[in-house]
Length: 121
Image: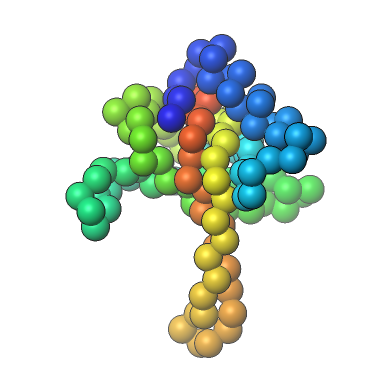
């Protein structure tokens, strides 16, 4: 997991941005958005700590909210505040489920491998 503001992290994310032209591994994604919900530290069932937060990503005039999870490198995670602009890259997972009323729904989750803070908000 690479986290921070260094040129190395920017290079890693730039590689992820260009990945579609090189036939990326299935479900790899690069995002640019603002922190919607600051990271919350949690513990997985297996006892490993992780951080979870949400990104607001602009998609052609629509805002999509993406849940993000970081398993590795949470000790390197800088303080993130609502509204901060970040770039992130990782593995996309689409979770399909039914609402309480029985309607089909889905949510997006990205398990991050790279995170770059672009502004201090």
